[in-house]
Image (tube, rainbow, N blue to C red):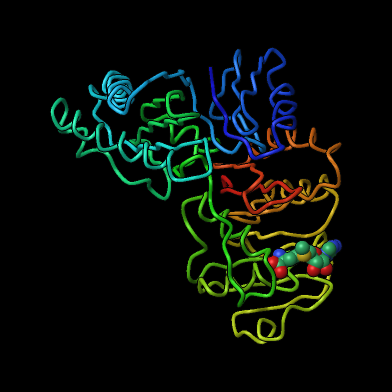
Length: 344
Ligand SMILES: C[S@@+](CC[C@H](N)C(=O)[O-])C[C@H]1O[C@@H](n2cnc3c(N)ncnc32)[C@H](O)[C@@H]1O
């Protein structure tokens, strides 16, 4: 059984997305943000844009006390990980109540786990690491969610699976990234680019060449310039004046769908407002032609009827990519973000 963390109100769309890939899937939505799924086999090439975080092979835990929680978690963790003794990341999150009670209980469980491990497997205490910016093939992941003080779910994922499943398993607890705030950039849209960078595990680098399609008023460009990149921005409308005058900015008045770079660039950034299939085709064209190394592209929906376009798009994009992510970001509304790194 797999458990998937989902944003409020998105369970029906995730269910439809799963059924398109796995018609035999069976569901049990026990809460409005946790979906239990049976009968599917999630693999490295599975993309589920509406899943926030996957807990593969989750088992239910019933534990009356802090001590029994700690024992259940350590037993399962030692059984799965002690032999290979990898670096491991531990997420322990309450998913009940509004106050601090759940978090306090998790803190107590964490302390009790440390005590048990110090006695039984000291090396596993040393090998537990803070969540990294990105998983590498040596990392294991243990995820535990308390759905009430005495019940919850546990998923232990040995290395290299967190890395292999990185499109669905994030190093951030519950897959959640707070929406960034910054009043100095011209629009709130910048939070999507910042979140995509965090999910990839690396930002735009100094000296990178970026093309920003549909760039106005300019918050994505502003982030790229702040990182020290050079930007070619394409829009029908100009960007904010300070960005237009930036020495590393080249602005082109024109059609984002007609623009092609004269030589490959480091980043395609595209937040253009267009029909979903047009944006998807634009990215596929850039990837097919090796026009860019990395990419972040927003797919904007009106209503829900175009969501089925995502699956064939993901299949094709995967064939051109070393790393292809498709996710409705925490900062997205009725949008999905495609980001990653091409093969070329
Ligand atoms: C959501 S805004 C982009 C916001 C931008 N990412 C930011 O952070 O400020 C979408 C932009 O796409 C531009 N746009 C829409 N269709 C376009 C096209 N065919 N060619 C160029 N720009 C286009 C619009 O003018 C608009 O400025």
